[in-house]
Image (cartoon, rainbow, N blue to C red; front, side, top):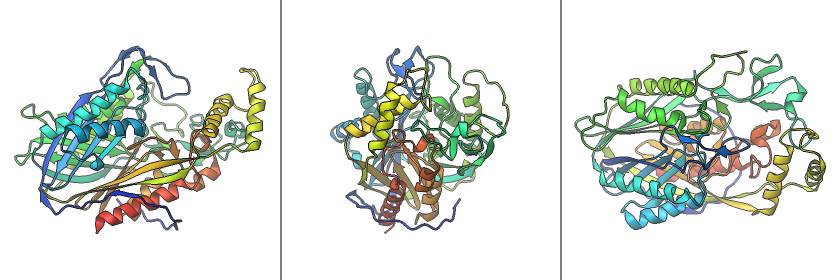
Length: 467
């Protein structure tokens, strides 16, 4: 599915790390899933105020799909986590280089963005997460076997809603900086103030399917631009609908227990401004805990399983990987904004000047002010024949993913977000002009034209791999 759009971009500086392109060879593939559960009691993050976890409802995993064409190896590692910082991924890469023959430069690592997981960097959990990523790659390498591969996409828009809306009620548009935005994230459902969504959705479920030469399913990796679903039990750690899909797709493909276990994987696409709530409806069905995520996972898995039946599989494959660091400037509060936050700090907690989260954003902006002036952001593209997979370490607005699909030199393209690092939300410059939660300093941390530079850099990497 291709979308046409015409934009002009400024220049971005490239530091190429790797861009090997292999001669087509006979494919081998391996897959594995390793549990990465945190200790119970670790705080669950995803909202503004963390709270202690009480139980592991369903296990979190690091899921790996490894491909080898005889010369080049590439791999995907998708972790059930809200976000993962580069330092943790890099620690895992170092161990992978030491303990396997899989070059870590060709591995795309990402987080699903489940909102019912715990922080990845705590002293009591970091080692478990790093070891899980490494062991997933090691096990996938051990499971390498002759394979065939296919990829495709199918549309399913019923579960997608852009969560940023134009509204007529100014009270809904106030922000923590004493101003008024033009759009509101997650407005009241069915409100008479709703006008229209401020952005699109991407209905495509992209997927890669791998089978043995005799047809046994080895792995299926899907990609859908839906933030998450939610609706967990109080204090529960859960992989959200990503984990349910991973199990359900194996059942629908009739994956057998003989040989290495089938590994289903669902990665997050460009879903920074898209969720599962139909804001135009005044009310919706009341769901029990986990009911809604099971429903969404079933819809997505059924669509993929049906589409998979029509694919043509190949064993002569050309793989490639290219990556670079892009330097972006960090947003900093100016003198006027710092003066505003001084007023905010003087207010009682129960009497905000403008917005209930103004003290939270005062602290977030002070953190940015005290922090580095620039980030070195990892960008990556993997290639499987005429399929390109982009990796961007942000919660990426959907229209950015659509543009990358549209302008990609490859026949098929999708993007995995929160990949190889995590730097907050990535709106477009036009969306920055509208305001809203995702654009607020502290939620978004980099220069306002970052999406332009990132898109150009990703397309440059694709062009290098296409040669």
